[in-house]
Length: 324
Image (cartoon, rainbow, N blue to C red; front, side):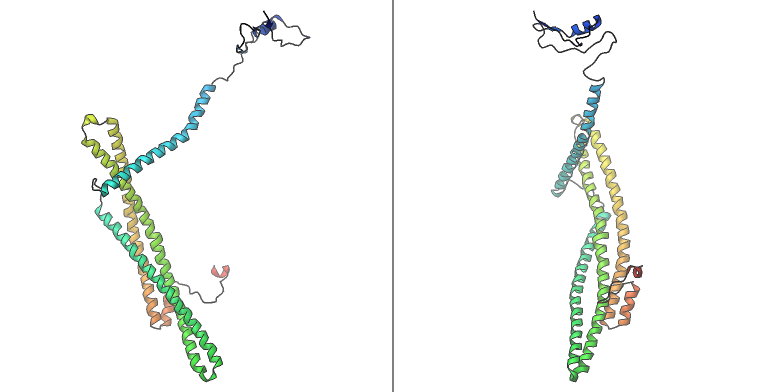
């Protein structure tokens, strides 16, 4: 029988007895153990044992696996919650449109919201008309300015009609100058109304939208709770009933919070809207009346009253020192 022995010592050194026993531990008969796996090396002299894996490696690996799964599990939980909520809200809205489910209504708040939306629609119409007025009136002012330049040029080339051309040139230049003042007032009116419609009111409408979504979500869970309470007790799991009640209370709290936010937003919106429109309507009336009555002094006084800077034609921009 052939025996293979692993020689781990130099040829010039003679192994001791203990070392020979260690060498024999790794010797094997080829016919008896052709594919044996070596066991951990144990040295009897010092008691040192070499293991294939460090202590506690299985716990570390399992902990790392749990840490790696936690972000994915959190995302799945969020997606699951969003899917359930979206499904319930969609079902509730369809049921309301079909008349198969009731909705929570705050009559005073709903009427207030409807008035705000109608007000925004009417203000947007005023804004559109004011922009059209400025566009057409700007064309009139530009035409008057060009006409004044044409009269001035003809006055120099036509001595026999020089006085008449000069009179008309002066008139057109004055009309153009007064028109520029009126345009400054109208542009200020448009700028303020645009801010009111597209920012101030729109911000309140965004809060209203969140309130309406919270209302639909609350009604969805309220309908689920009513459906469960109408069933026989032996057909409803206590765990499901408790979870539905908990969700119902949670959505009710959110709905009441958004409702209070909407009431506060609409209160401040009404105060701000009245203040802004009072100032802008007074500006619009005074400027238009002064221009078409030919009262240049009143027209300039209107711009000073509302702190509107008149942009002079062909004027160079002021330096930053002058602006400060």
